[in-house]
Length: 160
Image (spheres, rainbow, N blue to C red):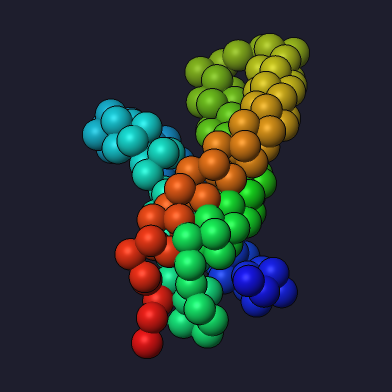
């Protein structure tokens, strides 16, 4: 087990998981598509870290021997990276959504102080949600990523 060689697959897969979460968050802003994507997004928040752990273990297994422990470690690292980056991407999408809401309120003729309050509350909620999301995301990402990596290690994924 070489931790140094595990970092790159973990970063690649963690970034990919965060991008996929960001795309799903962006699609959920669109009114009709949001109704369709919301149940899918709810399921994928648990499936993506497992799949990410499997993918990271497979990438790591191409250059080194892969056993259950190595797969679990690289999967957990990928889950941690995804757990840190996904709430940050979600925060940025939330800022966009908040800006759209403030813009719609301005078009409808809301007072300036109401617009400022709406923007401030949205920003504060976004920051709090991102911080809580990072804490929960790191824990769940590590656990679910380790499960996915261990599964890939058990089935011998990544062997040449």
